[in-house]
Each structure stands twice: as structure tokens, then as C-alpha cells.
Amino acid sequence: MSDQENPVFAIEKVYVKDLSVEVPNAPQIFLERETPQINIQLQSNAQGIGEGLFEVVLTTTVTSKIGEKTVFLVEVGQAGIFRVQNVPQENMDPLLSIACPTVLFPYAREVVSDAVIRAGFPPLLLQPVNFEALYMARLQQQQTAQPNSGDTTIQ
Image (cartoon, rainbow, N blue to C red):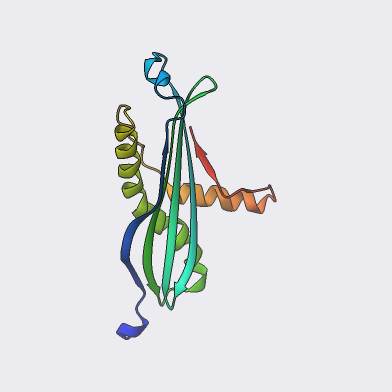
């Protein structure tokens, strides 16, 4: 097999595409003593942007609430440009849905933690995510013909 036929998977660029921090009930929310509930949603989207180049955006939305009051809302669109060449078509979806988000998640986790701290709250450390298990669950959901929003919620 020549070098031109060898599969290529390379990270070209990692960047924050979108970042939003909201503390809608400040300053009163800082006086609350209850432990908030944390809800985390992950969504991954991939699109071709050139010959063998793909942009993958992992959107991580973290909502913290005490009862019905929002403590904070942080949304990060962590993106990457990946070079993918000489990969069989049947392997493209798993590569873009598992490998790319796995690369992006540690960056997103750091941005979320930093944003939460800068908003005046204690650090929030997101636990590792098994994107392969999420991908397999999504496939199983699609095979059973259940509606799929493309979002994955972790509690």
C-alpha cells in the first residue's frame, strides 16, 4: 500500500467557536445555600469544509438550577478542523461521531470549568464521556425508529 492510500486522521485546528455564560438571577443567587442541580447536554455536528477536511463542533450546555431558579447557564461550542483521507465511507460516521468529539471534549471541559469560575462559582469538573457508547445508543435508538433529537443528556 502506498503512502497515498494510507488512512489519514489529523487534527488541523482546535478552537472555541461559541461561548455563552449567563447568570440571570445575580446577585441574589449568590446568597442561596442550597446545592444546585446540574444538567449537561452534549451535541456533536460534523460538516465537510473542503477536500478531506471536516469541521466538528461539540456543543456542551451546562445548566445549574436551584428549584426553578437558574443559577448559571454555560454553553460552549468547541470546534476542530480534522483532516480525514483514505478512510472507507462506512468508517466516516463513527470517526466523526466518536473520535472527533473524544478529542474535543477535554478542551470543552476546560472552557466550561473556566467560564463557571469566572462567573463566580466553584469549579465544575465534567466527568469523562464515552462517545462510543453514546454513538451506539443513538444507532440503537434510530433502529427502533424512535424520534432522535441528536442531543444526549447526562445527569
